[in-house]
Structure formats: C-alpha cells, structure tokens
Length: 380
Image (cartoon, rainbow, N blue to C red; front, top):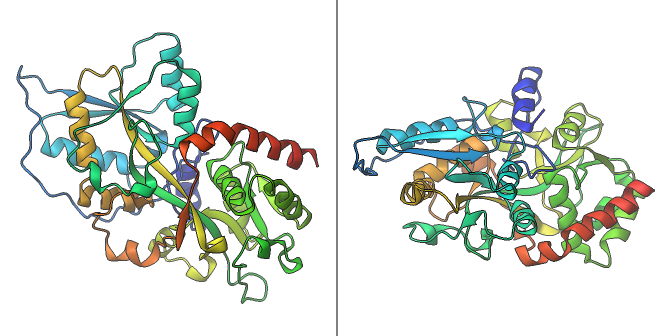
C-alpha cells in the first residue's frame, strides 16, 4: 500500500497523516501526499498552444501512481483539468508500476517511449538513469519563462534536465501527549542517544524507503562519512526501530508504539485539515536542519512535442499552480513566487537550515553508504 492509499484508508480510523509526496524511487513506493485540495485556482492567461492542423495535440505525462490516483487530493487530476481548460491540448497520464524504471527498461531495449514528460523525478532516479544508459533519457530544458523562479537550493540535476516543482523536508514528528504527557523530542542527533529516549524513535529502511534514505543521508551530513555508522550503532543500542517503509512506521506511530517517527515537516497541514490533535503532530528538526527531497519534471529526449512540454512546465511553475500542487501534494513549492494559502503557510514548517547532498556526491557514494549501513545494521 502506498502512502496516499494508506492515508485514504486510515482516515476513517482517525489516523492523521501527512505530508509530502516523494514519488517512488524504484526501491520505495511511498507515494505520500495527502493534499487537502483547497482551491486556489489558476489565472487564465489566454494562452493557446496552437493547432495548425486542426487536431488537438496530446501531451503524455509519465508519473507515479499517487500523483493521480486519489482524485480528491492528488494534484494530477486538478492539473490536467486546469491545463486543458486553458490550452488547446489534452493531457494524458501514464503511471507504470515500476515508475521511471519502466522507461529505463524501454530505453535499454531500444523500444519507443510513448510519454513526452516525466513528473516525479528525484536525484536518486537521475543517478540510476545515468548509471544504466549511455545516452540521456531526458533532454536538457531551456527556454522556460519561469525557470529562474525555482529556488537554487533545490536544483539537483547538474545537466539541466530536471526542473524542480516541489520538495519535502524530512524531520522528526513527535507526540506531546505520549505516556503521561509533556513528551518533547530532543533538539539534536546526539540527543536521540540519551537513555530517556530509548526505544522512542521509529524510522524507515534506507534501502527500501525514500524517507529512510533521506534520514540516513541526514545522519551522514551530521556525523560525516567516518562517523555515521558508529552513530547508527549507538542508535541501535538505544532501541531505534527501523521498519520497511513510511507506511509501516507511521502506522506504528499512529498506534502509539513510539512517540517519535521520521516523517515530513508538512505533517500538521493535513492533521489540521482532518481536525486532529496537533499536540500529536509536533515537529523537530535535528540540529536545526531538515533534509530536502525535491521532486522534478523532465522532458523525454525523443518527444515530438517539445514546445507543448515546455508550455506545461512553465504552467506548473506559475505561482498559483505551485500553490495548488503544494496544497494537494502536501509538499513545499519549489519556486520563490508561489502564493500559498494561509492555512498551508500556518501549519507547514520549513527547517531553519535545509541540507542535502548534490548529484555528484550521491553518484559517487550513495550505493557504498547504504550497503555499509545494511551490512552493519542488519548484521547486528
């Protein structure tokens, strides 16, 4: 069950959840996203794409299932309707089970790729593409009117193929009401090692979970390449529980099995919309930092509709569209110009400092880091 499906199922049972929409990364299917769908609307700009031969052009967008599979909350259906209402074009989604790996496999077999764009890329996917294909799956994107509104800190493709459109920040969510009440999460990574927090933290397997991988990378940022394995050894001695994915860990957290879980800093947005007790959805950024997980969109190299693809990407970067995607995906917008509704701005929290590793560092080290973690953690 992906994150969005989990939330839809769990909602009736009072499980509040949240936030962030990491598309699957091929090792994880944490669709996430619990958007609430407040209508910010789009501003018609009277633009058309042109229909020289009288036929309505179709833009095919590949993405992960959770981007489109919950019509009341997912951004996909709203985005399709808004785009088609303004432009003389239709938009069709493809949601292959294996996500971007589906297109990598087709490229490896030299089979035609039917999609024009992919929405939901992250840096790990780009690395996997570049490791598996001699030629690029995606083309560098230029000529976007709103490209310079994207936050520089969220750029994750040195070759200019992926255009960020939203981001999640990984942090610790904690329950102030746990036990006798008054529970407070520690302010630092070292604080998680104190005896008083023994057995209190739930997180995810970095090999099979995007959020778990982000938390592992944050510990490497904090403790360094030479220190993170010792830190995880100490976490293990202090009773950290590593579950398979976000769904499993958040279910355990929601069931009161532990007072802290690794999750997203937009947790309170959905909790507030669902009328949950926000004391059970407090946030802590260890060391005053949150690990950024931006998502991007990219144009397939062989598309025969490059201009329509660019039109769509510029549309996604509009301030009002960025706001709507953020609300529906329960993620932060990627641009500096998004017009967020007051409810989102009030309950979503950006970390004092956003941290992440760049493409080159992850390409050179990610596999070794996660393998070393797995050997140590699973071996113990």
